[in-house]
Length: 421
Image (cartoon, rainbow, N blue to C red):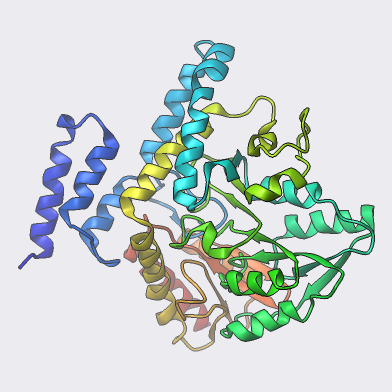
């Protein structure tokens, strides 16, 4: 029978052979196979993952929901490409690195589960969704359905269209956390009418980690001829799914979040038959083209960051989408299931697997979110973020695959001490 000690020795054996392996992804794959398919709480496998990051050992970073650090292999790729560009920028950027864009597009499409001809590479979710929001042809009186828990940049983009073009925003009110798909779908579908042109769905609410049944809402919308845009900022490379599973018309995400790609990298998905209908955010000579590349006319961009996305995808594939999702949910449950038992502590996130994963939000009776956030950092050097939005007033905690259980124990120690005051 395999034991943790034997697994550890086996894994370390692969690590000691690193000098014989020239391809770092190959080395990582070998180390991964040493444990076959480790469970989400296998300490030896996740020790290997933790060592792949260069995070500060004196800071407990539990705000990975904002932006995630990159594993060392991604950082090194970025630095290598950056140095290459500086040897002759216009030559190495436009004539050499630019040749990697199409293979990268194919790689992203494989990860997303769609055609490469439906993927545009950009800088973040905001840019991706704004491309659609400002590119859609909408007339005065047309309606768009939003939730008050959608991301502020998205809400502001729609408000600008409302101000400029006379469209109407119809708001959906959701009590969060909520654990009933039918009630969620009903809240959206009850807002639909003959004037509704599009519904904006946040796949995972960034304030507290609430999942929304995006596919069910999309099905209800499509039955009425309504288009669907999905904000996948917090679910891509976090959950195991394909964009095709959602049956949305448009999808945007940030690759510097859960994929751990370089900062300022993102992706836009547009259904092939819809591309011609969307004006690009950055104009080009053929705004009504059916080519997804019309959305990439950004001028000079970060070639090093773009090309290093490929290493982030390799890293993700070596972990495995399902294994990563399981690990992230394990980490959330590890602290949240204990915290909720502490007197005066309230969890503002569902613990059911179909409604949450890594992100969770808690509050302490008698303390403001800002007070908790300040004490966590000043006294324990735990970095989180205080959330005050709509009916949520608490601390968002977001571990990642490099997070150690000892760090979550420190969080629990801090929560317990504050709750006792």
